[in-house]
Length: 175
Image (cartoon, rainbow, N blue to C red; front, top):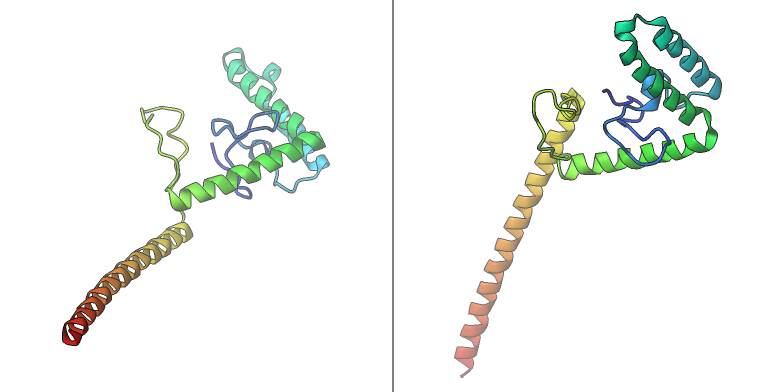
């Protein structure tokens, strides 16, 4: 499941409250941008339902399309109601900020359920070239910060020892 390119968000509950990374973004499901108007959302929903309606499918494919139709209905119900959409958008923003913070400082969440075919296997994608460059620059900056701190602490310790030795020798000459 792909994240919405405009929001970077992967999912939310159908009622617009709380993040759930196992569900796709309502905007990308309907194929509309984050800034879509009510009319654009309605047109995209009707277009998607024309092709995904379970009654238009062969019996062996009906179950999969019932699930898709249920998800399309949930997405439309959320995005067509202004209050639900506002709550959903707020959730998206909070989730995007949290994901950015976690990926920058912690490297993202580590999941331990990496069985072949597990539901979490689709969450990781290859970083883009700009993301790789940004990550390298951040790593370099962090390394340089550590080097400067280590050199500063070492210099402080040496200065303390020299000052202590100097004071000790001055006290000995005064006696």
